[in-house]
Each structure stands twice: as C-alpha cells, then as structure tokens.
Amino acid sequence: MSISSSMNAGVSGLRANSARLGTISDNIANSATHGYRRSETAFHSMVVGSGITGQGAYSAGGVRSSTYRQVDQGGALIGTQHSTDLALSGRGFFPVTTELGARLTDGTSPLLLAATGSFRQDDSGILRDPSGNALLGWPVNPDGTMPSYPRDNASGLRPVRIEVNQQLSSPTTEVTLGVNLPASATLPDASGEARLMTLDYFNALGIGGKLELEFTPQIDPAGPSNSWTLAITDSDTGAALGSYAVQFDATIGAGGTVESITQIGAEGTAYDPDSGSFAIEVGGQQISFFVGRPGVNEGLIQRGQSFSPVGVEQNGFASGNLVGLSVDAAGNLDAVYDQGFRRTLYRIPVVDVPNPNGLTALNNQAFQVSRDSGPFFLWDAGSGPVGEVVSFALQESATDVAAELTALIQTQRAYSSNAKVIQTVDEMFQETTNIKR
Image (tube, rainbow, N blue to C red; front, side, top):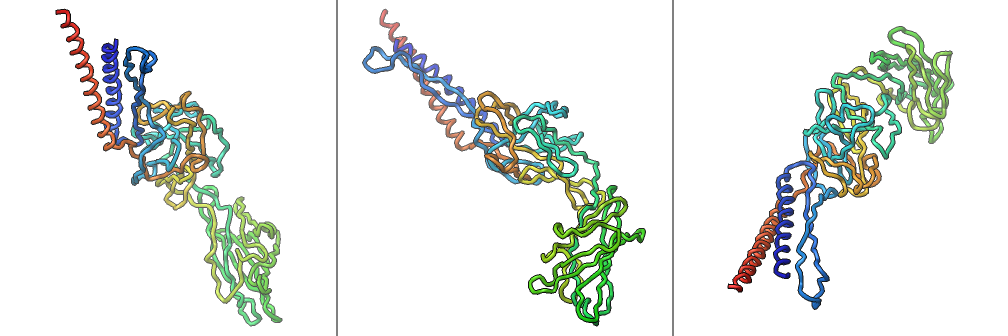
C-alpha cells in the first residue's frame, strides 16, 4: 500500500509543479505588460488515513495545487509623454467597459476594472486603451457643476467621449476691479483729470466687446476729498451702463480702503457692502463688478500718486478650439482650448472592492466583480481608501523576472525529484515482480 501511495504522491507532485510552471511562464511572458498582476501557485498537502505515526502503515497523500492572482499587488509607475496615460498612486481601479459596451449611452454598459491604461481617442472620440476597452466617467454639467451620481452602481457612468471639432465660449459674468487710484489726485490743488481704462468682455456667443471705465476725482478746496466718480459706458454704443460715487476711508488702519459706494442714476444696481459688488447690464447680459468691501484691503484702493489697474480680472472667453486634454489628481478630465482656458468634461471615479484578489481576471489586464471580491463602490480619486489619479504615467507589470527565474529553477528541480520518485517506485515494483521467478 505504501509503495503504490508513493507512486500517487509522485504523480500529484508532477501535476502540482506543472501548474506552478504554467503560472511562472505566464508571469514571465507578461513581464512587459502594463498593469499585469502576477499569478501564483500554492501547494497544499493531502493526508490519507490518520497520518499518525504508530497507527499502521503510512500512506502518502501527495500534494494538490491551487492558483490565484495577486490583484492587490501592482507594479511601479513609469512616466510617459501623453496626458491620457493614466495610473493610480494607490488602491483602486479605473472603470472601463468593452468595445461593444462603449456604444451604450444609457448606463447599461458592462463594468470592467483596469489598473492602468493608455487611452486614446478613436474615430468617434471615445477614449480607449490599445485592447479596445473604453474609459468610463461621470459627465459634468455645462456650467462646470457636478451632478449627484449613485456610488454603488454604474448607472451614472458613461463612455468618455471627446468631440474633436467642438468649440467653446463663455460669457463674462464677473469682474474683479483691482485698481489703485492716486490719493494725490483728490488734493485741493489737483488738476481733476479723469483716469481712463478699457475692459474687455465676451457675450454668450463668444463675441468680444469693450467697456470704458472713467474714474474722475472730486476736488474740494477745503482739503482732500478722497472721493471719486466711476462711470461705466459701452464703447460700441456709448450708452451709460452705471455711475457710482466712491468714498475712500482716510483713517489710520483702514486708510485707502473703500468707505462707501453710492449709486448715481438708474443704470446698474446698487452697491452691496456685504458682497462688495454691484452689477451692470450690457446687451441683455449682466456683469457683476467686485470693487471691495468697506474697510477691507481689496478691490478699489486709493493710495500714493499712481494710477495702477494691474489687478483687474474677468471671467469669460471668446470661442476657442480644443487642443488637448488634461486629467488632474482628483480624476477631473478637462478640455484645453487654444485661448488658454479649460473646461471640465468628466470626472473619472476610482472603483474599489473589499477583496481585490477575489476579482475575476479577464483578457487585456481587465477584471470583473465577483462574489468573492464583494460589491464595488465608486470613490472620488484621493478620497477614502483609494489613490489619486496620476496622469502622464502607466503602471508596469508586477512581475519580478529575477524572482520568477529563481522559482523556475526550483520548480524544475522539484519536478525532476518527483519523476525520480516515480522511477524508483517503478523499480521497486519490478523487484517485487521478480520475487516470483
């Protein structure tokens, strides 16, 4: 009985080491595959009978093997030269879908998981990796706000699609009027000369216009008035859009800051001291001017002897062409235009499961949620347990070629040793047969 069990044990050893050789060869073959997770073979002893010494003849149980993939152990990150080469700095996966699933836009695309990806636009503008898997993301509203999407299912995810020929413009809605007015211009012996500046703005169609801002100092023979009149007109039509009397504080500590702003006439809106702004309307478009809150060193300032409008800023931009894409650490995918502005189109969430090693491995370094992995959850990149998105980077294969070659030598020796056991048992059987002769 012991001799025959030895034969069975040797055969099981050959089978187990053959399985290990398979995982080693797979790991070495994928040593240059980005995002590859290495496979490993584990051996488990088998016991026949009690296996206790002194309880009769011993029977060799042999060994059995099981293979698994170490999905939670990724490779190192390497830099690239393309903004949509994406990797993660920690735990988690990118949501992707199949080539056919990318054609679905109703949230029913099958969800696959990828550790990294070199995504490029196809002929339809969909971002795909070289194997055809399409990147999924949450669409952002045209005004840049992020809708509320479910986190425990993929119904809100859509294939990331970039319209190559799209143009974009944005109307000007806010202006920050950071201007220093010369305090010397309000002295009794000042000339009273007005200071002029021109401000560009853009309408809803991306067409630009100009506003004329005229700052006129008020002269008081009795002493410094610290008072100005701001008049805003439309350069194209000459129409008055708003007029305001601005009084500056001259006390110690708050000197030079806005003290009060009073509306003159019916054009525009009244100054709101809480927000530090007023609004004017041009061509049916309302533009808010931030001029500063009382006593706060911001917006309009009156100090010194120079007129300095270097702190003027406004939003809005003319129509521009798409020239590139960028992805930040939070997973926001922005379209970059030749006018220098950008707009967020999608947010790419990071998928996480309780047991990554329980994921089902598919072709092309993709994984699928299974019963063993547990349910998935969609996190914002860099929050919770997941890592940040790293653009211009790919994740290398998790294979350590030197370690695999060492394991290959060990497997070869173990296989040869098990074959030797079978050969020895065969010889012993032959000797037993020869006893009858």
